[in-house]
Image (cartoon, rainbow, N blue to C red; front, side):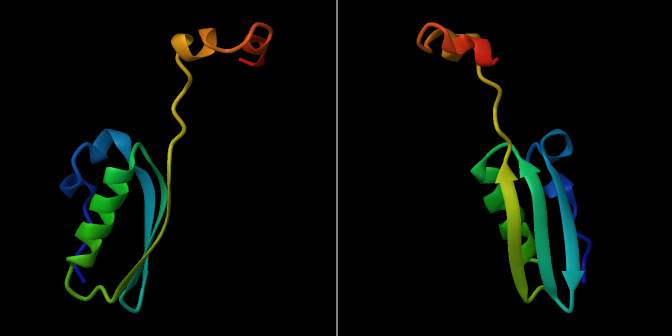
Length: 82
């Protein structure tokens, strides 16, 4: 089976933090990414590798920090949660 290389996923070097496990042709992807497009691309690339019979995913999109604008839009008194 070929190695899965994060470099085939745009922005992967800086953006992706995921683990790849394989067993008898089954590949399990798990970890955190910045957006759904990166999940879709990781699955697409993995499925295209010779010898891969299935792909499971437990990948999640990283939560983005709230911006000051989002915080300022909250009702008075709720900004203290930051």
